[in-house]
Each structure stands twice: as structure tokens, then as C-alpha cells.
Length: 377
Image (spheres, helix red, strand yellow):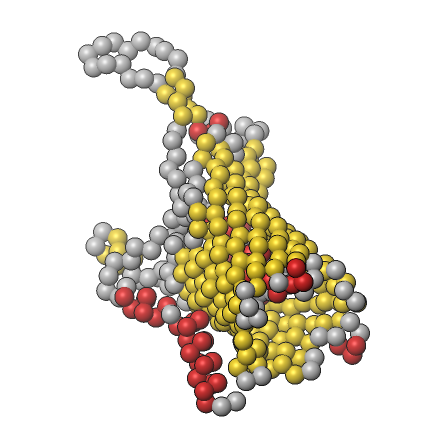
């Protein structure tokens, strides 16, 4: 590999993982106006599939399977065969997240379409009130879901683009809210020497705000008598609380993936990604995937993955309260943002079956386990 090729690699990685430096520098010495927790529907950021989870989300440039429905719809255009996947995530506080998708290549592989569904929440939690501190026997549930349809097109042998349309539903007890969003992604694939390199640009969850309506927002209001008059007992009047509409978690992502080794059955890919959301500080991450295909001509393929992602929302510093500045940092959780995983795939002819697992450390919130099962034909 000559000097020009190495310069191209360095520049590409710098774009993927170093763009956050100027953004952070501009905030030095200014007030922190980051809208932590300022978006609704944050379950839209939980990912899809254990492979992407093990790579820390830095997967948009490499995703060419059914999980491209989530990470980068442009990657669907490189889908080799129809695929379906179901995956589950045991999240914090006994909540669960599930994702499923199905995708089909069309027109000889020049374009593709797909559908996906995500669901997050919990159910049958007792209701406690001041009048009934031990519960009144009733329960409530929280369920957030999205349904999406995606399409992708190859415009050349190096460039593809895709779009995803989403409908989001948020249910808290009997209160419900609906929003609509769009994802847009592009994928550029080329070679550096004999090594494949891929770059991606993705915008996710750009759409309408989310507000709620429902029976739980109906309350009884006791009207106050006019000044100077005697209060007369009366029945409370029914009124409907009006909720504020909250934006969705819009996410901007730039990623790159380079095969540093592609020899025979072995492949080693390094990945990097920069991302910026409207409810967090800029973040970056990197990962590595090692894969061996068709081991001993048996049809089995094995992969191991690992990544580390910066978690700016888990770092709290320079908080000012009443003129007193404090500095608190979750530095004791040094493995926060670390993710590990692997996968096993069996292929025979056009048929393919795969299983993937990922573990992700979330610092003070503990670890999470992501499982996914894939079938292709």
C-alpha cells in the first residue's frame, strides 16, 4: 500500500471519529445547554440485532444485512438474499425491547425493500396513590412501538441511498401519542489498494413531535367561587389536561469501515463512527469484527466482535447549583461503553441460519444482553 492510500485511510477515520473535537471545543467556557432527556421516544435509539449492538452502534457503514433497516437503509441495496430477523434485549429496570425485520432484494440486487417493527416497555405494574399507598388492585402498562417501511437503490457500483418511513406510537397507561419520522442514509463503497472500504452518512428520526391524549389526562376540577361570595358545594367539573409536544431523538451519524484483512476465509474489519443527537453531546465509537467463513467447507461461519463507545450522557461535570460548582464523574465505571459479542452462521445453498449474541456495559445501569436469530433464503 502506497503513501497516498494510507493518507486516504487516515483522513476517512478522522472524519468518522474526530469531528466531535471542534464541536466540543466551541462549548468550552460556555453554558451547557445540552437537552439531556429532552426528547420523546428514546427507545428509537436502542438498535437492532446483536451484531450491531456488539459493534457499539458503529455499524452504519458495514450493515448490508436485514439490520440495515435500522442502521442505514442504503445498505439494503447490497442484500444478497431475502432475510428475516427477530431480536430481543433485556434492558434496565426489567424492561424489554424487541426488534424484527424482513427485507427482499429486487431487480437483480440493484434495489431492495423491507419492513421492521420495534417494541419497548413493561406491563402490569401496580398503581400506588396517596389514598391507596399499598395499591388499589389496578395496574398500568407502558408500550412504545414503531413500524417502518424502507427502500434502497444502487445508483452505481460504488454509491447507494435509502429511505425509511416510520410510524411511532407511545402508550403510557391509557394516554397515547403518535408521531411520524423519516430516516435517510447513503453508502459509499470502494477499495484502498485491495482492501474494501465503506463510508456512510445517516440521519434518523427526523419528523413530527409527539404529544399525548387519553383517559388518564381527564381530571376533576373544583371551580373556585368568585371573590366575595359564599362557596356552594358542587360536583367537580371534568377537564382534560393538555400535554406538551416533545421532539423525537434526531440522530446524525457518519461512519467508516475498512477491511484491514481480507484473505481467504478470514476477514478483519475496523469501524469508526461519529454521532450527534439533539438530546446528547457529540459522541464517537470504534469497533472490530473478525469473521471466518465456511470453516473447513462445513458451511459454518464464526464471528467475534468488540467495540467501545463514548457515553457523554453518563458523564456529569461542572454542575452549578445556587452558585456552588460541583464536579461529579462516573469515572469508576471504566468499562462503561464496552460491548462484546459473537455469532455463528450456517449456510447451505441459498439457505442461511444465524445466531448472534452481544453484551453491553452501561456503567451504573449494569449490563444488557442482546440476542438475535436470522434466517435467509
